[in-house]
Length: 275
Image (cartoon, rainbow, N blue to C red):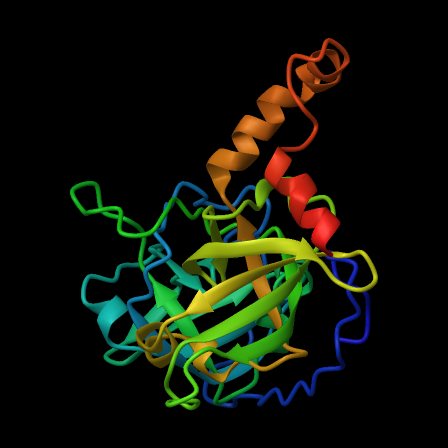
């Protein structure tokens, strides 16, 4: 998008092939804009288990917002006005829908802080409805509040017999401010997908990175199947890790000074020595 992202990594220029729509007139962006400050919503909880791949059918200005029309079927089975749907991990509100499409609006801040601003007509997006009270928590708690956009740095084939459909390892860059919340075997959300961290480390420039292994099924039913190095993805750290980190922050220096806790685990020091 031609500017530095929240993560501190330079985002590659995006070709915003935005198609104007004459069939749907632009409407002023006001307090009803689904993700504007003070707007209704914000209580939805997701699991990171993608329900279907939608497709961007239209994108056009709607006042200060951008309206997206997304083709879908599964997530519309119980849709209602004001319902929440996560798009690539960003929680948006349904403002209109039809038999096989729905529409939402995103404010400039959402477009800036997520990869939704780079979407073009024809792009596939991960879709998920909020967790129902009686449903199983198949992934982990995902709020749909993107922490940063981060770059996909590397892609390594783990299954040499099936390079196009087998398991792959993806390496992502990570801003230092979010690194404390990413641990081996912990959970992260990438473009709304609940994933387990395989390993953490640093690149040759000392910047934080982490790896995930993506199985064939996940490649087939999410956008990870078409992601390539250089792409930017939406990243949300584990909410529980952030809460614990926030609660512990006032006491961390005191505990470190008293030798009550270590500033890193032995395994972390071992890994740093191997790099």
